[in-house]
Image 1 (cartoon, rainbow, N blue to C red):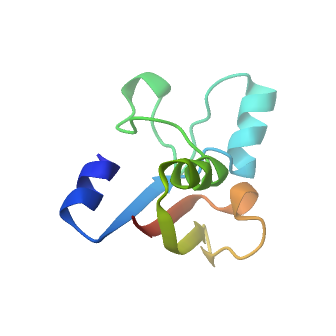
Image 2: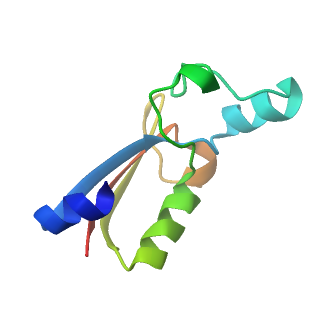
Length: 98
């Protein structure tokens, strides 16, 4: 879907819940189950998300595909996250291009 968006347009905006958020890690580690939290409010079997991924996963994906990240925005419960976004961001928004 991303490659198709970039075929049609010069840029694509991609947003996703960060599965590597500290709360998700704690729930998975101590609860032993896929986390359900504010940014991931569905059970694994009924989620509209096609994949669970982390900020680092998406950055790796862009590097492997040769996509350039024009900007990245990391959001927490109280606003933008600037420190360790893979750990503290609930959601990520990227603007990418070929």
